[in-house]
Length: 416
Ligand SMILES: [Zn+2]
Image (tube, rainbow, N blue to C red; front, side, top):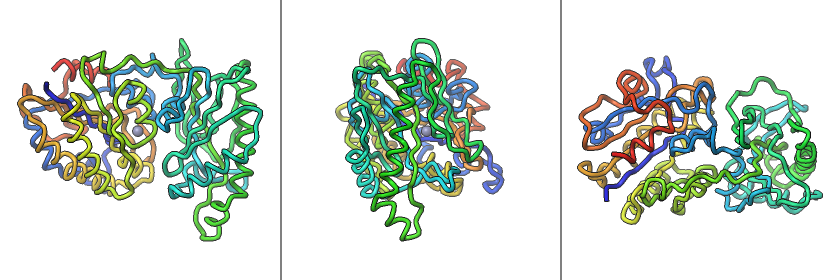
């Protein structure tokens, strides 16, 4: 059977940057290995979720053919599923960031720690925070963690605000909950608010969890040690996207009659893949980018012998965009070309197979935030003829009319 590799490069798209000769990092990067694929390809240039700037969860869902406005019950579900916390319908699943606050004003929503520090701090919260409800707190990666309150006699509600100030929760029909990247507007610290009366208990519980966790963090060795060494020390936690329902995504293997696997290292993307019914190929996020890319390329190639379609997720481009490092962003795109695309170019048979290269949303590395821009999509398949270099501008100029929204990408690709 013909094979499909679907690569999502997180926050790949960007705006033109003066210091890069008014090109975007994608346009500026030299992508010589991608030439094998642009010889037979078409571009698409869809919106992701309309006028809103997507978070990664809605971007990845849309790319994989799941309309976030139909299926999303809150990012927390996927994060906790991806951390193997096995949330059940009725449990409350939440994404957590370790951050820092100075004089009751926001300092940072992301305090990066070593795996060991994050692990240690998370275990202390698990052990030392006493609440009226049972919970599990689990370390993720860098500054991230997951929190699950297990369903009890009291019903948990999804109708709570985030205290993470960059993302605003929105509610739609049938329990659909989606956060949009609205940006950090000031340095105020907010409590979690109940947005409906039924959420009073949930908001109370979460605020109690935050204040008790903050005490544990400030008394921890990790905090004291980092302070002593003059490092940014976490002293606050930010919660977002509480979910209390299984999003019940239709199984991707049954939907398209193909056997899917995912090579993704981050909990969110693992969670979405697992919820879609993909087989997860065991992968972690290596700190060394070259090693990370070689490892992921190798795992993708190996998985091709057993699976019909592979979803490969690359995270680093979004992380450097949030830090404003556009020089690093184009350098990472060149590495993707050199290490991953070159490997795929050797293995994929362009008389038969399909490569898709796209992103979940645009992230401006000058504004350091997600944008609501259209996303560039490359679809390489033998039936297409030569296209120009892969860039936002070239996708805007010449693209498939069938793909208007990101949810249209996968049905189109699977029909090739
Ligand atoms: Zn993303």
